[in-house]
Length: 390
Length: 131
Picture 1 (cartoon, rainbow over the protein chains, first blue to last red):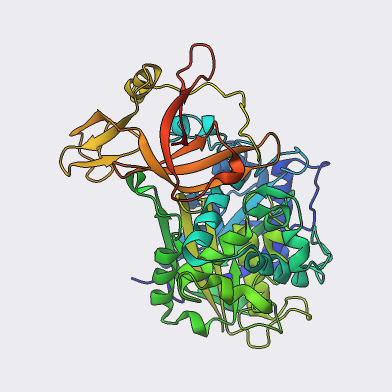
Picture 2: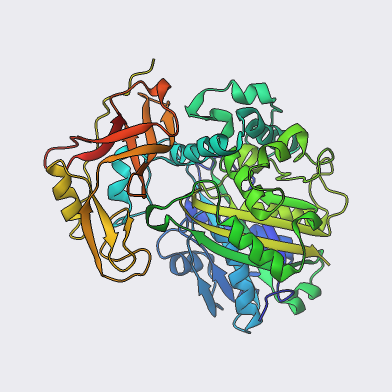
């Protein structure tokens, strides 16, 4: 059984805030839920399924569904695989819809790491108590930044990738962010700006890293019947894949990500290939994240990502694969340190033809969104969605 | 020349399953897992084989030598190097490279184990230094 064509994304909303010191996390969940309902043209009581992840306070589907006043729920999910969770949630929602267990599923994300002055990437951070690998890593000062930096270092060693090539990813994101009034960083930067920014963890510079922002986003996934009853452009999910990558008992290989598996599954289900994709939202916690995933999704050969991203190839209107036209996590928004939902939201904007006119792709018939949640190279959830404008 | 800093290290969370590994570290020995079904070493140690999930595993002493598979120098505060070291037995372990010039580190460099004190009552951390 396939989920192809069994569900549509009918509502998508990104909170405009990037610093929400005057709001609680639960209130942000409520505001994005309201925004997505307004976008779809639905009301609260139409929602019969709810999904959230670890950013939701308390026992998410209990406490946040309570805060939102969702009383008609017959489907719940709180799968948490970090920033990739929300892409996986879209697929899980459609599985429930296909089985008749739900018809209209709300997904929310919100958080306020900026207000809480969190050093997201550069301070040791773990995912909870009793995590089995922590005693073998935290004492060594593991941070998100140094874990991703080692992926970049190995990629450079094996394939000759350069800092200048990685910098092109940030440059492309900044070209898009200049048109987004809500983006945290709107200044267009050059390759020189990136490689001359302070070194955080060799070879990743400050401008190779994503922003830290408050905010959130929400999506509503609905059955074909509901989607066709609404007045919004139809964005149909035609392929989805999920996977984990792990440490293989210590036989780790830093050069590839779970996108190799989740991407292949999504392309197979959709019956399309990477060269058919007109726009791609690619998780961009760091520049190296994008490079690795582009290779693993099959947009270019393994090891050739550096050449692929160079010379503006990811810039809308310039290159062959416009990516992250909202400015992505690198320039626009990385709410709650989890960029998955904004990846789907911008892909939906593109498929609808509602991205900023300066970055809207002309042919928006087929779009992709991909996320990695956790540590690139060693252990993460990976999720890929392929959507078609009907 | 950037000397590796002597950072203050946090206490290690010892649990009933990983305790034998850390007890050995306190005695200056590096242990790794061995899956007796596949005769393959693994890391981090645990009570099951990551290859078969079988409980047919044991801890064995590693030679304590290896090569740098990847590394980075974290430069936001006092500089220190995080690395994956490929042990001669095969597994790649997350660690720090210490007692060295951080600017001279390179992938493929040979290293050997050293044990660095953490906190009072907590076992030492298994680190590596260039041979």
